[in-house]
Amino acid sequence: MAKQLSVSVTHEIGAPAQEVYAILADYRTHHPHILPTGTFKSLVVEEGGTGAGTVFTAELSAFGRSQHFRMRVSEPEPGRVLAESDLASDLVTTFTVTPVDPKRCTVTIATQWTPASGLAGWFEKLSTPPFLRRVYHEELAQLNGYAQRTVPGKGPGA
Image (cartoon, rainbow, N blue to C red; front, side, top):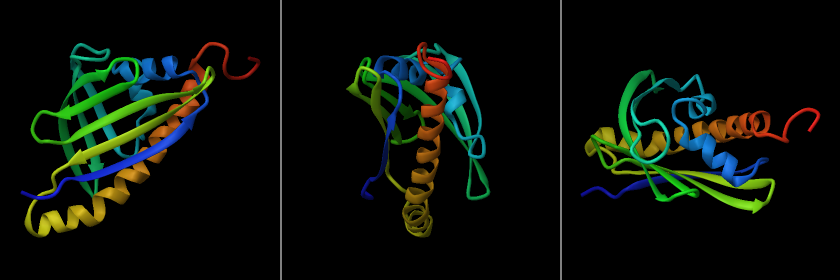
């Protein structure tokens, strides 16, 4: 069996942990606003919509190809960790929210998966980790901006 790959990126977010977690967990209203539009072509909620039990499909554009994922959301640590598990593979992406102080937190996006075998796996091992790091840096920057505009008491004039 091939060794699992993992990628993680952490950013500080200028909003309270509870509010940031609520943004991440709301796949109908808030989460779509933090997805980089150059990479994520769609996110469609099929079941639920907030936190555990949510099922959604996402279309991503990577390396000139569209990739489709059907994901189920769980909350291994409610209020702190959201996990998106691909229903067709062992790919899991987690969002971990850690308070820094009452007005700031860090968010880590981490993905683990088993790459394909053979030449496709070799290419995946070389290209996917740097691609995901770039996407996650962009996603976390968008989360920071969105949280600061959305959270009460943040933003202009606050």
